[in-house]
Image (cartoon, rainbow, N blue to C red):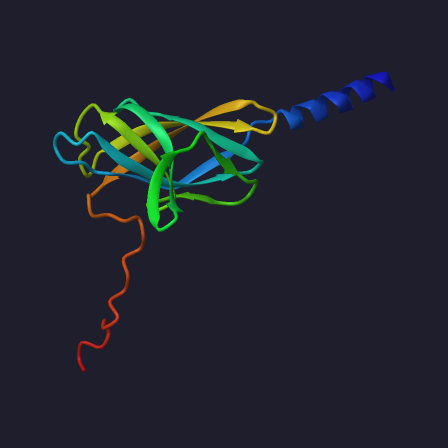
Length: 159
């Protein structure tokens, strides 16, 4: 009986301390021009359990920061945030105009077609940290991350 109780308690402890399972979809980073010192990285994050994105690291930049674009009165401002909550089962989009990652003090130009490695540091509800490695394709300067709008006149070319 005691052995079953200990086994049940141990199983409960393992489930509480299980790391958040974070998936990353649609990752990309914006290309830069020569001598440009910063750029943005974008993606969608989803965690199986409640978690928080705490930190981002990359070898291509002196530092990486989590930022948010938000309206302050009539002005859109960008500011650094300490973390981003990742509610269980809900996608969190990191995109232009909202939360995103800023790569600062770039060590070199980022060119379209190459990949940039990022490490996301995520903490679960039990304060356990997990590192999620992501490879982001470098997209053109003009890339928005949004699907290209369909031409309203496509299909009407013969009219």
